[in-house]
Image 1 (spheres, rainbow, N blue to C red):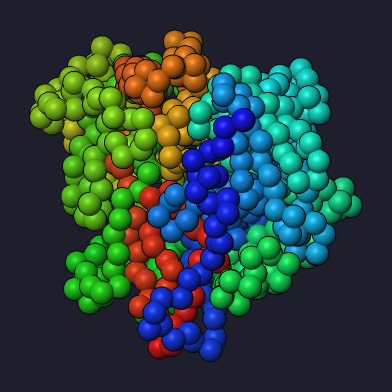
Image 2: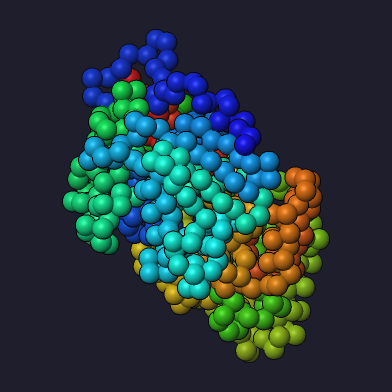
Length: 535
């Protein structure tokens, strides 16, 4: 068995969750307030899928591996790991001092139980197919109901040794284990309470913090978990996660000193840049903002219509006039900064001027039978948020202008939980969407458009695309894998499977007394790294 580079690097090193810098004097109150942006749909790792949920999951639970402040993979529950020469067998060695917040030991069986539960059709997890990206044995058969969860290729060799059996080589399988849906869950607690195990009064986690209080749509309070294996280095005593979707309200809380890190309304960017120049931080993100198309709803089954909409969208207006914080117009799904995406090219029409693109789009619409007298009427769904609203209004206006009034767009907004449910049920035509990497590799993006992916909510299906993604796993070199990814992206824009809008930047106001926080491209935040200095 070969040891992972990162396992070698960190196996014998002491990890410090929060390292106090020279000259910093700790505040007496180690309390931190953060805005999660919305109420989580659940606290159960198997039932969640969004960014707000990630802020809860990564602090209440800990996966086999996690990432440091610079997004480097580091040990989590597993203190070391290795793989076979063919990358088909991975062995993770768990810490013997890892415990649940109730004091029970965390065992390899808890991971086996959690992962089997994730893929079990009875759980109905939005990420039920995630382990298929890792090529774990029998995932597809289990998710489709053709095999039992017990046949999943995950094995507890003993209480502290977890072995993964893969169907095909995946050289980056360890990176996938960081994602919060692969958190362990306490089997005894789940079996005692059933689905109610993750209710605030019952939940037991293995992360650096435990839940003390939860008020839906208001705030959640977490306190330091004394049973966490590295609790002695965790400096924060209390975390308050607010659930504010209105950025104006969040910004007001920040200005009044009741929020330590916050976003702000986009239209205030210039004044924020002037008034809070030392607190304003901007950094790239491994995320793409796009519009998801429902491929099972007429009339957008027609690729000509999808192509017309993508052609006619002036992304520069969105990035330069609305966002204004360094976002890059997107014409592909995978962001250029993500690993193995260096061969991906924009479609040829991305270099055309808007006049030529609009003319081509109008031509496609007319060929499909639409005109001013017979307009194409569409609905566009977005979740409640001022930024998303501004973008949706701009998109509707851009399409109306560039498509000569042939397309009419009705905007529809829903609060977060309802929005997620509507998308999953397929009850929409076009929906706002955003995708951030679950791990730093282009497959984290491209896997979701495979036919059987549970994240493929637009129901795009293309046999060649599926075959290309399968080929990428078997590629003998990273360069061959990058070629496969480039071809997969070509298929996405040839079919107009989605409408990319821009590649994100992360923008935040951070109070000067917050230490250990750095905007991470992955947005994987572990608040155990933070501390507060006197102020």
